[in-house]
Length: 204
Image 1 (cartoon, rainbow, N blue to C red):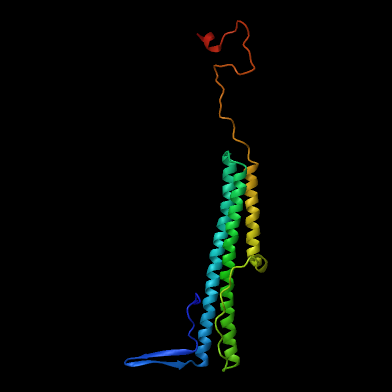
Image 2: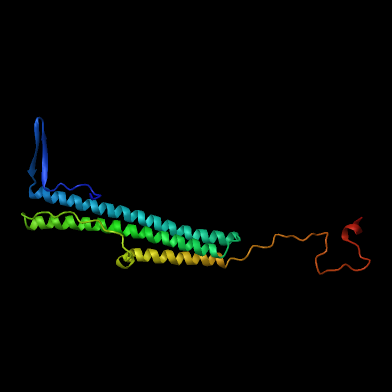
């Protein structure tokens, strides 16, 4: 299985000449260090770009949770009491699995960055150092919330906001009755006095 990143050609350099086969030429130490640093920058750039997208999506989700809870509570819609809780659990579970895959991708990029940075430092210390193979990709784990405090904070805040939105919907006042009383018809429980006439009849 090939690694998802671009292959790192850090040991040989191919020169193409017209009418001549490719001949591998060893890289000198400066070129080896430069290639390792480029690979390290690749992992760092992927990590930074994904982290920016992660916070944009998370902040948008937080705003949507609060706005939806406030909107439904103000509209006083007749929502079944179980529906906000079930939808909140589904949203929290989906967010959990999204953070799980995100942590695995971030951890892979961090290992890629640190690995080639350490290899560049090893070449500078020992010119005969052989660059090791790239690290394996991290698999998603159920313990990622324990390993990363940032994701643990995001998951906790999301769960808290879902509870707040659910409470706003639950404690919202019930919609007012839509039945209006007929002005020409006496209300229930009231009796007309004997000999009295309706206001419309008096006017006539």
